Picture 1 (cartoon, one colour):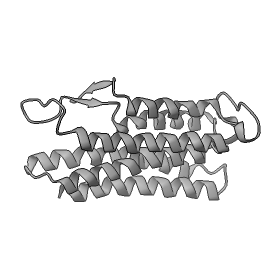
Picture 2 (cartoon, helix red, strand yellow):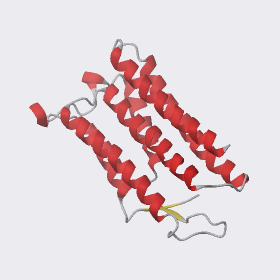
Picture 3 (tube, rainbow, N blue to C red):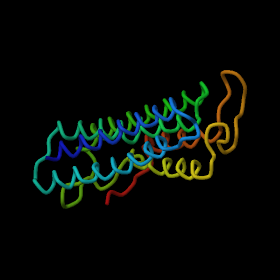
Picture 4 (cartoon, helix red, strand yellow):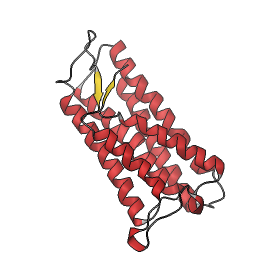
Length: 195
């Protein structure tokens, strides 16, 4: 049951990515697919939250479930926000390098969590007391920022802060929010208390 709920998280992430792609293929003035892309991600968070609740309620957890959860999280909170950012207008070569590094930071953060989860301090219920680095679902905060920008009409050629550099070195300074998020995910010094 918990694994099925985890699959629904992955489903939401995949649908978000496909919605971003559909926006790129359609009219830039029709924002329906872009809004859908941003809407699927919070539903992924709901399923990510619920799969753990169901596993604990049924007192069933497995290595398979843990790995499945990480893969679904990478899709919903790594690839989906990066795809949405690309659709929004972060499309220069350097933008895509930064978005790729953001996804790789999410991948590294999830892998480190899976390897170290057994060695982190636990509470009385057996749950880890804290996350090392920001959890990957915190990337939804960037999605909220992108939703605000979309609402204001700040997308494609109107992204906040414009562009810097030229040629291969051209980039949108606003993409650095993804770089900061990626660094926070892989930080070993940031300890976020688990609720």
